[in-house]
Image (cartoon, rainbow, N blue to C red; front, top):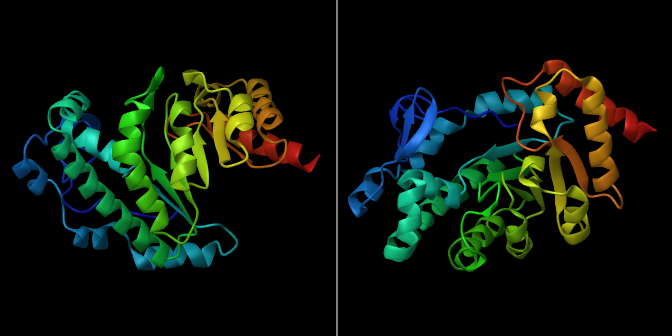
Length: 278
């Protein structure tokens, strides 16, 4: 992954309101602060802040040390997630009904930042972009397909179209109802496929595998445990469902985070390698 850093003075992942209008407490997101046009202006930082996000010297060092690796830049700065976090999900949802033009302006401002950040990452050597834009909970998408087509699909299409490298969309939750829009937007792949949200990899492979590289579906709960045989079974199951015809990449359904068992994570990669080499 391309190294990045939080700008100096930001409260993101700390305490207080950050530069995007997100409210944090002890490192946990609590709510949003944007309610008015004045709030939107206050909590829309200039694109010059990107200079603090990327360190060319550090990035060049990673490229030098790992010349055979694919350099990926990924961030949860997708316009949909950035908008509902800035307003708070309840206020954002009401805004979709009571003040759609304001919500659209907020989405547009976040999409502008997103394009600029990704273009800068590509200029610095990123070969693949991962757009983190969480759009679903465990029961389904946060908004209707109609709302997604009207408000978000055009922004995703613009983001993908502004880049000369493959773009992968990440979303937690039961996002199957939105994957046709991922294909329309031109995404190269989709990451997540959270098993706990009822995502059946075999079904996804059958319905979307011709158009999207599918990535993930390994249950993070398995990787937090100590049963290495269970890890093997989980990886075997995912490869059996996802690999026919190609276009599947083994990965956790979320990320590798603190709290996972390092031995379980190591076993995931070891067993994947063993199965591929058989």
